[in-house]
Image 1 (cartoon, rainbow, N blue to C red):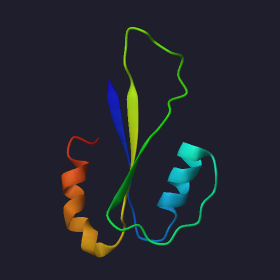
Image 2: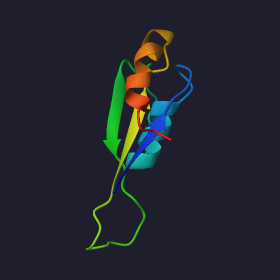
Image 3: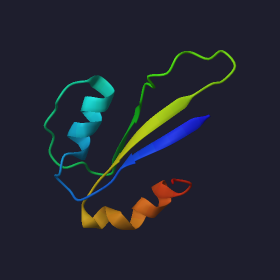
Length: 78
């Protein structure tokens, strides 16, 4: 079982800083993201030996030049 969590929005609003807080529990100020970043997101769930679970956190660049390719990364995302 896997999940894709996507951070999407305008550039320089703090999506990458939010991602660092969720993944590494620290605040990081970054300049604009170019392209995308993907991190494994640890789930606060008890271990389950019968079910493999994974969540990936996708941080997509907010600049208008990247918006056309966002659709490729948003496929199968609800």
